[in-house]
Image 1 (cartoon, helix red, strand yellow):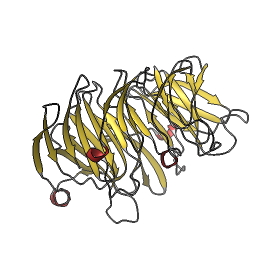
Image 2 (spheres, rainbow, N blue to C red):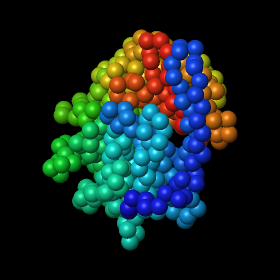
Image 3 (spheres, one colour):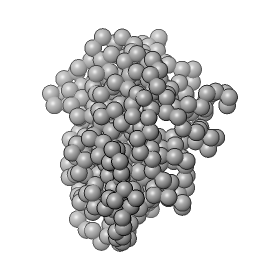
Length: 365
């Protein structure tokens, strides 16, 4: 694994243009066109919102997948760093600022877990005693600050086979270990530390996550399978997914209390068939109480828990008409709610939010 030394291939994939105009709110807008040809992409802003991290699978032909990490100036879209990972790398988890990630690679037929700096590509291996090196599909997660690392396994007792062990990444000490019964009948299972590091979840691909208190193991609440937990754990936005439900089930976006699971509000958006089966996505803007919701036909920023629409983004600004799935978008929001990133197909749009009236648009598409 090493930093990419030659920008020839990278630069050839970039098409850069610029256009300046005045928008109805009398703000300055600059459009820069860049093709982001990665798939299964994760995006995140640095803590100060100045840098956007984009990590995904390269389209380079290979027998094993090829992962790249690209950082951009979040204001101008200018590429800053480019890191190539070893072939066969998989990204399991990222910190909220995008700077650190857990990756898997393969060595002599064994799975290797590492924590890697996405700016430099420098990796530190996870102790092999923490996980099954023969597993092809390990589940390891980082807390949002990277202080805690969790590993999931199904090595518990007969009645509680699901196990999550949490470690302090700096000291390598065990923080806690909890077990759970399977949370659904059938389907895939996993689990790990929540972003705020105060709870852990036991997750089912059919039923969704069950949260437990990190210290006591007390069950906090259960949420739907497409739920977005705020970084501080205070709120959960539950997105509709009828994949394992009756088609007549309520199609609504619920705002729930992250500590109790009680419904505190709703986001009023249409949920037609083409986004009702897991196509919606969202991201919290740090701990500000703002939430970005991508619903296929609409994308906006909402206040939590009221569900009030604060800013709406016209589809023509962010949707890639050539995207394989035009109803699906990946979104990220800076911790101060000043910047938003929207990835649709190969079009990446960076917007500067002015929630008190107006929008400054910096588009990377």
